[in-house]
Image (cartoon, rainbow, N blue to C red; front, side, top):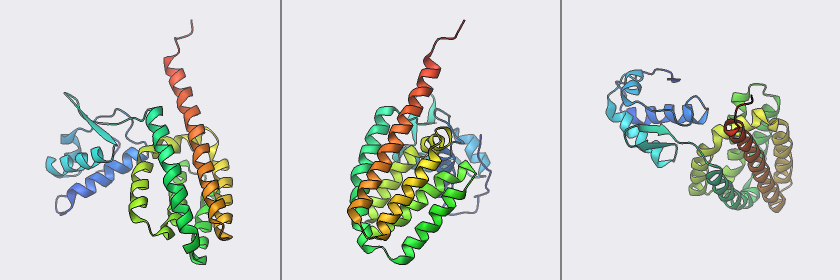
Length: 229
C-alpha cells in the first residue's frame, strides 16, 4: 500500500492521524479509485490497533472519500461525471458568494500573500505541487470572507475533486491556463472589484469542469473501446 508508516502507538489522537494520512493519500492519488483499505494492514503500518483505523475510515466515509461495500470492506470511492457536475455547480454558487464577501475585507498583506503563492504556482515544475498551491491560492483569498462554515464545506468538496484536478492540470496542459486565470482573479481582488473577481472565479471553475469532463470522457472511451485487431 502506498502509505508511509508512522508509529502512533503513543499518540492520543491516533484516529485523526490515520485519517489525515489516508485522506492525503487519496487526494494525491497514491490510493486509487476502488483500492481497498485493509484495516489490519493499515493498523500495522501505523503501529496501532484497528480501532483508530475504523474511526479514520468512518470519517473518510463522512467526507465521501471511501465507501464500505458488503464482503469487500472499505474502498476508495470514485467520482462519476454526474457527481463531478454537481460538485462544480455547488462550487460556483458558494465560491461566487464567498469571493464577494472576501474582496472588501482583503488587506494588502492578503493580496501579497496570494501573489506569492500565484508566483510559486507559476514557477513550480513538480505537478504534485500544483494541487497544493492551487488550493492555497484560493484559500488565501477566501479567508477574508469570515465565513468558516462555507470554507469548511468547500474544503470537503475539493477533497472529492482534488485527485482528478491534479491529473487534469498535468494531462490537459491546464497549468498555464490556470495560472493566467489566477492572475486575472488576483488583479480584480487587488482593485477591490468584488463583482469581477466573483465572475472570474466562476469562469475559472467552469473551465476546470469542462477540461476535467473532457479528460474523464477520453479515459472512459479508452477503456470502453474494443481492442483493435
